Amino acid sequence: MTGKDRDILRELARPLAEAAADGVHARRAAMWRSFNALRPARPMVLAFPEGGWRDLVSEGDLVCEDATARAWELRLRRRLFHAGHIHDDQPVTDTFDVAPVVHVGDCGLVETYVRTEALGSHVWDPPVKGPEDLKKLHPRRLAFDGDETARRLDRASETFGDVLRVRRRGHLGWPAPLSWSLIKLRGLEQVMVDIYDDPGLLRDLMAFLGAEDLRKLQWLEAKGLLSLNNGPGDYVGSGGLGATDELPADGFNGRVRLRDLWGFAESQEFVLIAPEHWLEFVLTYQLPILERFGLNHYGCCEPLDRWYDLLFEHVPRLRRLSISPWADRELAARRLGGRYIYSWKPNPAMICAPTVDWDAVERTTRETIEVASAHGCALEIVMKDTHTFCGDPTRIERWSRLVGRLVREAA
Figure 1: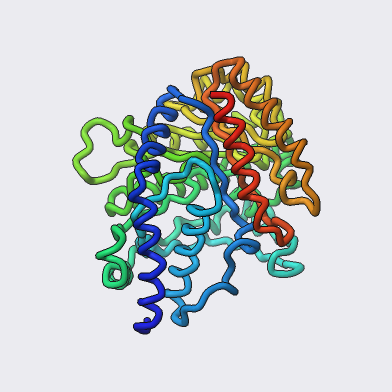
Figure 2: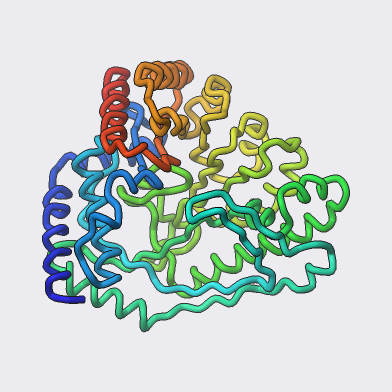
């Protein structure tokens, strides 16, 4: 990294540290802690541009030369854009995180992808053709590169150490993505057939995948590679921030355990199957993982309408449920009440299509606020899965201002 690159990064870090010092962010963090304890002062609002970042801050805006410096520059510029242009409830923090370098091997079978283009659709060849292929599965190789992790931490500390708090922060990813792992190995249509024609194969596959995910988590725990996700800037599940006084769990002595963390699972690929089949082939294998965590979030884009009873009965310490664009919002409000966080994901197409009907955005948001309020729900409104803004960088800012106004009016 050149001295010029370092100077550029430091000039970006300084205004971020200054923004984090504004007392509004400490107040936001306190609001999140109360909200996650099911004591909301008002609905909370979050906006994550995700794929839409290409229209806001892209690699074409970078000026650093070194590859690592460019990656850090992109991260800092996006955080600054969020702080200055997205008016949601995400606190700005004075931190810069470096993930530990962990290498995860394959399980013996790897799917082959064919893509139309870099961001286009794709198909794949699922490698599990029959029961004989299960013999090829084996535990994944897990390795921690401590030397490379230390090198990255040293470089970050040399660059930012007197401006931002540099931390080694583990990243769990999606701890229980079993259904997607299954689909990649077996194929979506074939899995739907297997439910009736070869349920034993499905059970064997899910048992292997569940055991593998749990083994990886226990390995991360034993290696000391987990990091708390209960802070004001910690994204948890499929949307929402993890700030809470309920974690870490009792007995915490500085070494992070799974029970000190938020856990998460989803099963989007199984949304149309009967609840009893979902319990048999999916949730049964996710539960041994979810049981390890201190608080849990369930769901992503799948409507949970037919699964509420099973989720309430089986998922331990369930706190947050995703209410997707395809969920029955009124049913969700009645079923969740004030017992769980109502994590509503508006349809991103409303602000990602070639034209935006802002009246419809306001009407839909008002309806959701009203129905959630009528049932005493702890409502968070999370705009995500925004893969384009059609070249208009003002849309996400306008959405955040509009929704922020509506939740303040409802308070």
